[in-house]
Image (cartoon, rainbow, N blue to C red; front, side, top):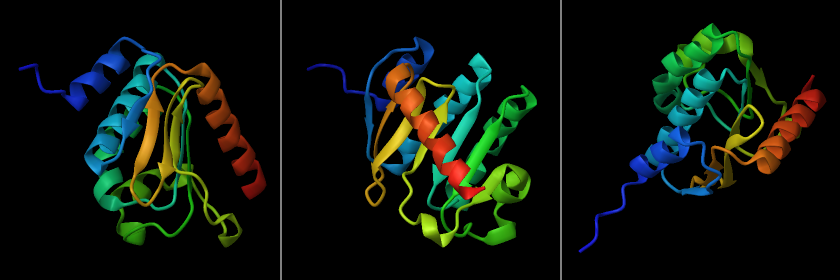
Length: 159
């Protein structure tokens, strides 16, 4: 009988070796692990981070505070757009610490895609927000640039 597939080890290998490998994701813990590795990549490669999220769930984002802080401490830019209200408002640990990097979208921007893009070649892009289905990659310049440019266009329309 073969070795059981280990999702986290596979993601770690793709991150470590900068693989151009599409990674499927369909649960919250896998999403969290991808976020961690993407933020590690931003820290390692000194790259900017752009995030669009329909909500800032305290239970998810609070666990990423240290990783985001490392990116900022490296003098890299972090830009976040949140579509709806922040869970727990000012009591949201992530929001209270990084408020200056967060732009709230107006109600005119309902239905924005959820994604994180690091630099211009690494991303996690949700294809179905309700089921948390997403694709990710640590070295896909074509989709990375597309996602980065999409963020820039959305942000330009917000400000």
